[in-house]
Length: 144
Image (cartoon, rainbow, N blue to C red):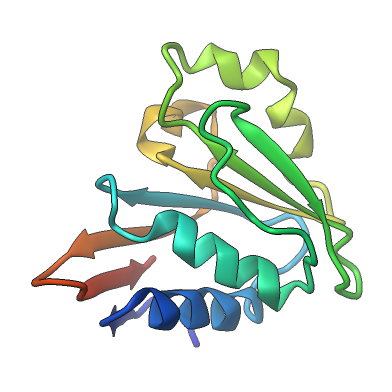
């Protein structure tokens, strides 16, 4: 899988499997911004990604807590930081919770849902994943 392609899924199971596969192309220090409408599959994708890193805890959207930190079972990547900006009222809240301290750390991968809300605070070079709802359960997932 490359970080510049488009994939289509027809179920949550397939979206999760795509996330798990995507974990294989990520490196410590990567920040990934997820873009897409409510219900487009972002959190389901993160659940699969977490599986790819060997996270054993149940992954839930941190909509109310803003950020969850998951320990991984991956060589070199110790933590998966999952941030959900849906409920942010001000992008500076990301700074206030200390999220920016995780960006670029070589032993951490950071995933940011609703990245469009905090784009100006993200590193200049971050990976982008776009989710589009198609017919029924079909999703278009575009990388890059």
